[in-house]
Image 1 (spheres, rainbow, N blue to C red):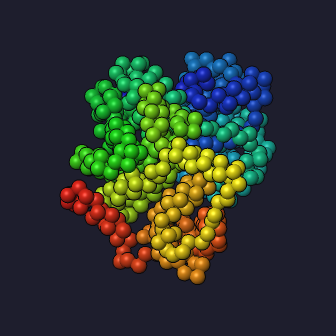
Image 2: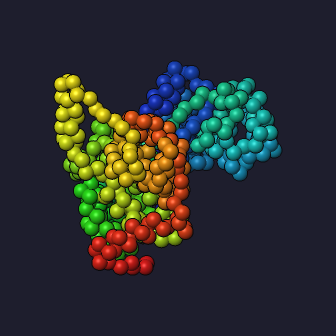
Image 3: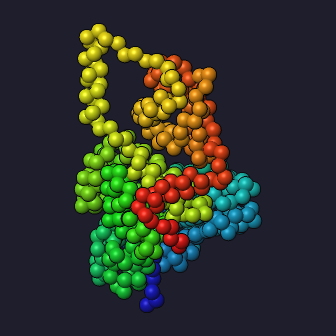
Amino acid sequence: MAYLVSARKWRPQKFEDVVGQEHVRVTLQNALREGKVAHAYLFAGPRGVGKTTVARLLAKALNCEHGPTPVPCNSCPQCTAIAQGSSMDVLEIDGASNRGIDEVRELRESAQLAPAGGRYKVYIIDEVHMLTTPAFNALLKTLEEPPAHVVFILATTEPHQVPPTIRSRCQTFNFRRLSVGEITGRLSFISEEEGVEAEEEALVLIARKAEGSMRDAQSLWDQAVAFGEGKVSLRSVQEMLGLVEGDLFFRLGEAILKGDVRSGLEVVEEAFDRGVSLGAFADGLTEHFRNLLAVKVGAPPDLPEEELARLREQAEAGSEEDLARLLVMSSDVASELPRSPAPRLRLEVGVVRMAKSLSSVKVEEVLARLGRLEQGLKEGTSVVRRPPKDLEELKGRWEEVADLVARRSPRLGAFLREGRPRRLEDGVLELAFGSTFHRDAVNRQRRVVEEVLKEVFGTKLRVRVLKEEVEGEQYEDERMLKKVLELFDGEVVQG
């Protein structure tokens, strides 16, 4: 027998085998049981989550010799023909390549003919949003009053592109992305049935890479089986996908949270020496900080318990504000890396900034200060707030300003730390930024900064946001790297 990819070989042949779409399965089976089948359905959702599969199962349930039934027998000629894709009464049409009015007119004429051998003629139109406007208009009347023996099932990944007049004539079912656990469970079942030795961590990694698509996950599983010569291990999947070992992110996360610049740069160098894609490394670091923040706020991601335990332990080293700031900064690095003429330099500078961005003031110390302040107020003393005498005095309290801004908006606080006070004159504070992105981000919310300045100094200061007058976007990055190289007696290695 010819080889079949797992997505075809293990396509569900009964409703109970469909993963993750319980709301769709239960509704359709109840409708079949009660004889309340609609004449038109719209299945909407991401790719690879079961839209076409459920459409075929519905066609099978309608035309089964024992049907219409919520449980097709899978053994009668009609069920067998539909499963093999050879039924004359179930027509699958690709909306992308049959999108014109002429094709829809042919469909309308075909719909008037009686079924060849089944009970219903079922038209499954995939990617229906690709039809032209005239084609939709031609389909409209048939959808509104179809022959009694016809059922239309429209499938799309872009339901907002389907005209409202079409949607209103269909029962709409929204298919959702599948969870990592659901995909992992199905891959584990397939591995067992195929006699493939598969590590759970490897299957979890495949499921995460599939981003909610069962078909994508099964395609990656096929690739992993071939790459690993019949075995699916975590290391082989990481190598196949060009991914980074999770341990590197835990080590880098620990270094950043401790403010250990040297260790952080050593991890980056190790990743570079292994030939890891710097873009994939930056994306992975962003995902790592996202997972840390999710664990910190009590919304853990769908990951193995062992990895969650490590995340919980590491998340204890930072506050929610710290982790949110690091998530924003790592995301900025990941987005800027593809456009950077020196990706490694940009990544290393980003690691240095992240390691230096966390406040050195501990929570306990802040609480102690607040306690002393509260006690002083009770005793009748007052807090004196006065305007800064000069720029140097303002710079001395700039960290305090940045902390207060970060309490209101962690993202804005992180951006503000990328700039520096440059001039204070006539109640106007000029802030200079090396990056146009950070300058524009702070400028859009400068009112928040002005409010905090008034809270700290007791006087209104207007904020003017400027770009550093340097040649090229990379100046600040190069300056910081130079300082790092001087500190560690290093040199730039081109790669």
